[in-house]
Length: 289
Image 1 (cartoon, helix red, strand yellow):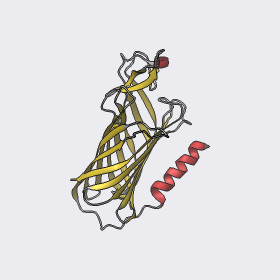
Image 2 (cartoon, rainbow, N blue to C red):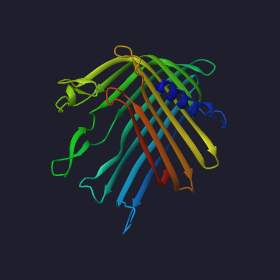
Image 3 (cartoon, rainbow, N blue to C red):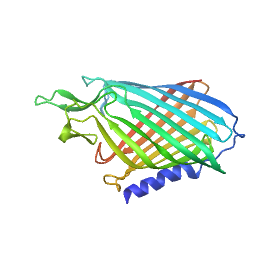
Image 4 (cartoon, helix red, strand yellow):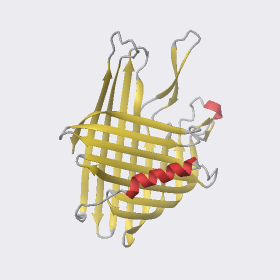
């Protein structure tokens, strides 16, 4: 029930209030992107309520390259981000963000705003990820848990697309192939690594995928981008729907400065028994291209 309520809230946030006030689309390639650097820093001196000096930075790229020709539409999006934080009382630099994602969605018009479609989605991370703890002496320790292409997720399949504009679309793919790729030589926790059996490097799934995108203007100089992915594996526990929802809010100060807030929640029972949540807030230096 909690999952259904969350999905309903996500769908409401992402699509109910979306508006499209732009002129009709132009044929050919449309390319746009943004590079953002977020910086956070905290310092304390004789602060009686406590505090820990830290410094953090996050670099992100969001790039779209879309094509339109007659009844054919082809949308592509790259999202990449990487962040580190260093605190005075920790021996290690720790990641605050690590993400690479490529989405491609092609459609041929069927009728009205509906298209016959095919999609491809690829996700991984750039560098090693760790689980942190302490040893018997209280010293901080870390153990490697993830790495580049371990895991990586590749999904693709045919479907039906509803598209009003580049800023408002929803795709349903009821015959989706999903591959989970890992390093088979990795020391596996509990004899399973993101659902992949010990000694193997891939896990193949077949299921239902639904994805949506909505970008809207909340007020002058404030935009909100919503990205939603839902997946159900027909072959194993189809009732356990994987959820990946990201919300990006950008509050522009001027051409180069903005305040950026990112919220992401992920539910994938093969990776973690519960919701994973990530939040990033900071002053951003932006460059559009």
